Length: 499
Image (cartoon, rainbow, N blue to C red; front, side, top):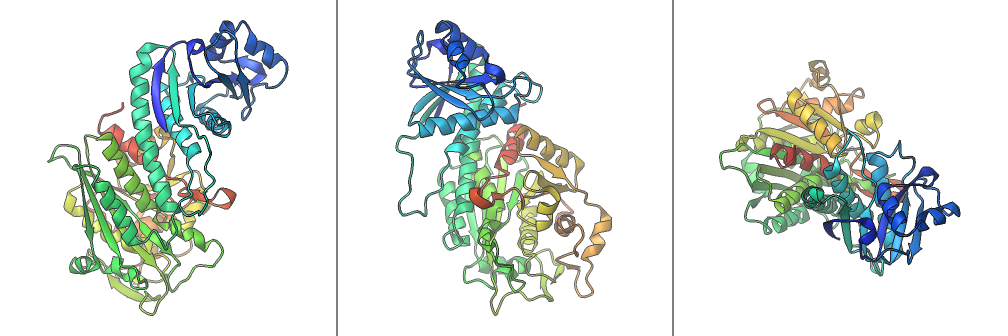
């Protein structure tokens, strides 16, 4: 989709379609009032006929409006003006994009209502419009022999601001929104690919492909022999049950000063997780291709960094593997030695994400990071605790946790903090090793983070458990691309690109 910004009078726009908002009880938005005056009350007369009253989810296409230069006007219901908030605004954008696509309109100008709220600002509203319209247009049909793509999809969208002073803000919002939307789409594509295509080697190839886009991005792939030399016994124990070799993907984006400490993002890249010997129940096991969504989000975030040429140093690390049952796979009761030298008793082979992450977290120390954030579809307990809406956040640093929480709010990709108290650490006690890889039934998300915390004591570290938010199940099954928005929001703020 091609996006642009423009300032001007809505009634004087020459376009195939002008999109306007209508509030409940047929109340016109400011832009709609301007068009209504130019058309000598045509909008008011149409609404009085009862075809639309402005409720959320409604849409009405009008043709040949008198007094205007547009071919069509699409009216979008926005609900009550008092309750029109950020979420309603995004719903309106989504509905408008859907209507334009199904109506074979390839070009349009958006002039939806501007929110008057402390919750958001013009930059955020316009950025949301770009991200949401891209999301609504997203299709994954790479694996279909005869994809039914729209014959005339929406290709060009212009965001209209009435005051020329806001044009610079609008252009900035579009630039940021396009990069974020592109990173989200990349993360979705990687997540939606099946495990027989998106293998650890495939993920590594996608990282190399990304590296060729910019001289600022250096990509290195560590093979199993190199990981053996580094004594990554925990990571390599997971891949033993697979015919696919593990990969450690390292992406170094150097956009800031050479001596500036980087932000390190570590993403779990389990391209398929059958649970190993502790095999998962068969219902929904196909969705375990999404167990690499943490890694996908890190790759998507690095892609956005490249597109935006952010003046900050970022390192993305993705430990990639499969977890399958085999004669050489981990067995319950096995003890492995991590890169840190700490030993781990594997009581459940399906708690493998932490086994690959812990070695990647130890490896991250060599970059002398400012902060470390790991992203992982780690625990079903997080789904039970928070559902699909909030990302689980645990951290050993209050300032970093607050920064992430705020980025989640601003990026509309919310997280919720859970405790990381020492009392939970006792659940990982083992009679035979330094620790067990599970901590029992209670507080599964917390004990998983406690496990990871033992490998990040030297760092300002946070853990994002995206098990509930990384993909949707059911009729709308598919990757969500989360938490790319949160991570890019954090990096934009850290690099002083936004206030």
